[in-house]
Length: 283
Image (cartoon, rainbow, N blue to C red):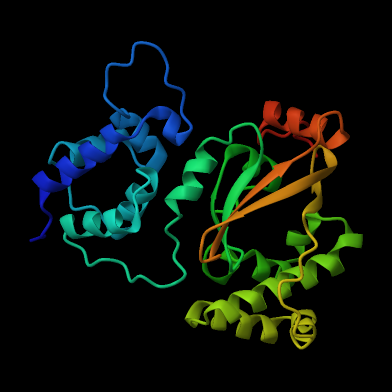
């Protein structure tokens, strides 16, 4: 027997759904919209669940949602941390621990990300974990939400997975390694917890390069506002990277742009057309 309060859960979901407009989550409004806020199928798409499953929750039916489903709902409905905890309680689950580092994406950063549909953008943690990315970021860098365990951290992949370095020219590798290590040390200094300690300990064990750089004690080595990225179809793309941090600097929104008229700008325009489809499937 579960403890889910189905009437209150459905009511809360309906109110949060109706409070969001399509443009709030990067969707077109479209003609003849009679639904207040988002449609049920739009919320289902945002959360990665079937429309039928979401409709049953919205109509006081269906099984008790799992914690994974609730996390997806909280992100899709752009809930604050307090609203997320309320959702968990209505579904009969304990509220997630409010660790300093959380996978719950800052609603403020998500609101900005939702409006960026013409340039690559992603939200990352201070452990270099990708928490959200738009379609152009997937087209530029690949799906970085698929990783699990320590491999969720781009820092861990950089020092342990050679394929991670294929997106950067070899002449930039040494500089990027220093940048990654210094930012991890900065994250550790802001607030050590089990996640960052485990990540650093494993990297010191698994990568001699990381261990040597770690001993240099560089903190926040900032030199990557300009990036050179190697795309498998478009080749080298030179981009500027703007960064917007949360107040605690535990999450950041990365936005990749290029000046009009440059080669990088033209390639971004082409990337927006082809998306994640390969130009030459035989390659």
